[in-house]
Image: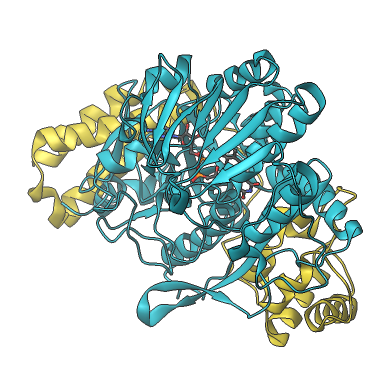
Length: 450
Length: 163
Ligand SMILES: Cc1cc2nc3c(=O)[nH]c(=O)nc-3n(C[C@H](O)[C@H](O)[C@H](O)COP(=O)(O)OP(=O)(O)OC[C@H]3O[C@@H](n4cnc5c(N)ncnc54)[C@H](O)[C@@H]3O)c2cc1C
């Protein structure tokens, strides 16, 4: 049966008649019901904007944690710039200001024919439209020797923030003088492209003050990364990093680059130099890489990842582990009436970032409102801005406007302008980048949750 | 007919006792109306489901409604306007909100609030960013991804938002 419960009972006249009475009875359901799995960036933004666009909609968010711990900006916990509490975001405004129902429970599965989702607590919730924004699942086991248990107790990831984030902060503070901090970057695609490079930069900055003889090493299974040139310029100016020739050669002569005779605190081992992780020896605190063993005092690993577990359980993922969809509406190619957004979905040129999830959420909210109203779905538009820090006063970014290439079902970048901070940016512009990064954390959280 | 025998007792049994007293009457009314309607219409879909399925469906809907009674504040008695289609510029304008606040209303000193900005000011600023006549860290990149028409549509949208 492809009708939802509501539509079926509607055929019997039940919902329509019930809607005529000013009560919330069992069938006061003439309002279409949009259910959202995941109250993170994508889910919360969808809920808020759905209610802003159509106050007649009933909107329910199902989220497994009562408090959201925001991943963006979470590296600042490591350096003590903020505390864990500063990452906490509540669902109060979604509930009180926008009239969103928030159910704290975990979704365990769904019935696409009957159109309902099952919750761990035993309840079922039926929907007319379903939005799925479950974030990522970290594949710890892809690095032999690594596991969730190890990550929770000894060698953290923290790419989904929580206990591991706090633990990593403590480990950094307890690191012996002259110790080694090893950051293991992930293969693409992954959540937050500049993130695995911002983190070691902020750790290096912290070490300059508190542990000046320490070393920060980045092991990388890639030979380049988003914001590489501008990030490396920051490393060069702040941490004695010598920029490899490959990245220097097309920098204009006006760009101020330092040449350091002694290696600095931070180094980067790309794939070409053997940076790809092979396995982990937890007891010996040693990462085996293609280029040899690296022993460290603190190791932080961003393992390979795929769409959040529930997306896989619901059969929404493809062989790559991400969710294929119609790029105009983000409706799943595998199940109708289900829209997948955020880190979990395929979105071509759009990175897996909070900003992307936020603008996808708004376009999907609009697509759902129009579909329910029986109107044509307008052309979507998206944007992404990832601010990143090379140091607490050294900001940079990648920014893009995106458009739909409908015939190819692809999302493409618009414009030929540089996507990055200019290589010859002035010190004032670099400082402003850091000011904007901090301000963004606040305004962005408000746009999603408040 | 089978619908009446399944649907009605279920409806009444499930609802009475869980809804407030003044709502009971209304629920009964709904039940009667459903009876009348189903007798007369013989809804075609009704034959395609089993008793059990129907019972389960009703139970779930009731559960859901009851659950939603608790946390929601979706009970504003204000009449709500039907959803309007997106205004020109609205979809683009929403992409600014991550920094400039929902609908450009923002109390954050670092970013310019856009709500209520005079249309011409918005257009000139964006075109200057785009053409490099005005220095920026990031806005040049963003403005470069937009056409002049898109910028004008956004300008009109933001102008009409009360700050
Ligand atoms: C260190 C770091 C820095 C970052 N910095 C930036 C930045 O500067 N800018 C930027 O744009 N992005 C940044 N990001 C990325 C950004 O945080 C993510 O891209 C964004 O959170 C993705 O949103 P989402 O909705 O897809 O997933 P999430 O925000 O992770 O939300 C998913 C939600 O779904 C819930 N959930 C999952 N499964 C279930 C289930 N079965 N039942 C119920 N609930 C469930 C989870 O509990 C979670 O709350 C950063 C990330 C990290 C790790």
